[in-house]
Image 1 (tube, rainbow over the protein chains, first blue to last red):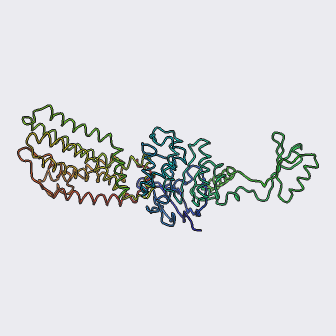
Image 2 (cartoon, chains in turn red, blue):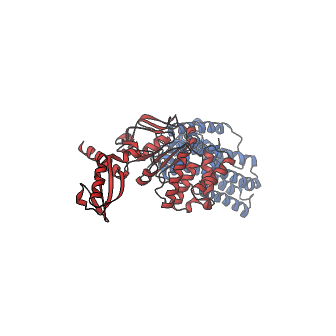
Image 3 (tube, each protein chain N blue to C red):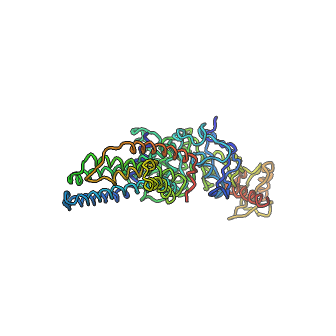
Length: 305
Length: 237
């Protein structure tokens, strides 16, 4: 399968007036987003995530390297009719939600009849059908973000590029967006999702890329990244925590991890001690732990350098 | 063409309050037409007409120098250029929007001028020719301002536009050479409006009009070229 989005050794440097000061935002950045996947794009503030997205959308030119969006070089206007983009902190013209979505759809060359149908559809998807006639300037930030999502979806895009799509949403709306993303993937769409909400990324993304100081520092499937080698996490009850190395007691439960090949022996020991096994799972880390580890490592490395 | 029209209409809609304020000046002329004896005070009427007419030139520079900046500062430009809209189309939309905004004003002034000045004996065809001169001058001034605003903030863009339009005019004024006035023919077109009188309303001089249209196209192409290199996600300060 081809790449929906591709960065090839892309570098971007911001320069002050007359180029006296330079701020590298991306450095030798390589990434391929495959067709039909949801790729989570993570990184601390200032890592270069938004810069990468803006380069892909053609809002700026790379200082070095090149990239392709749906097979065309970055900045190719016609290709953007197949892309849906939600910027971070979406800004909208003050007019009725319905009018606004139609305006953005028409900019993508959609015909009036198709546009009317699709506008109603996407406003329903983002649950704004009852507020379609209201001016978006009167909307809360969360509602404006939903209008932003609607304008990104109106052209039924092949590739969705979302920069913090749920940052202003309430939990209910977040669940709705999650469902929307999963449905889009099921329909064969590609989603490039930049988010700080790691739990959300963990739930929906097939692969995760972590960016730090303009460089890609981790890339892999979400399952692979979360898996901690071949270890098993065991939770048991009615045993003493000091009976197992590294065991932690919490609310009467004792949890500890053992190498997968010692799992059987560990379970038998729990039963010998009169304990009750509550759960046995392959040990996983949270994305948050990975994120903190990766960014901390690189900070130390950068500090040492 | 459709995105260009959409962006133009959107621009006019966004600028509806400044346009409305501009139209109040036309109302002033209409009020004078109603309140005064058009024939006896025709020189006063013509003076107000000319004065009200040239205001729109300043507004065209204001529109041109602030259009991109406003969209970039509010980040609304991102949602527009994320669609299948090229930067050239975006700029074309703004140029058309500025021209429509000024056109609304010129049309309203043309109607009022035809009524008030026509009653006082000024040729109506001449009123409309002057409005055409004014509109062409506005399109050129707005495009020059737009070009500067692709890389300068509105204040400097307006200053640079004033310099580009004003220097040839000043040289023309000092040296008395007409050629200089046609370097950037905004001054030549404005002068056509300002020098009109009941005694000599003037003829139809098409050269500055055509030349202004050619320059408008040239500046539009130049701005599109410059704008294609601009990082639009980076704010202009």
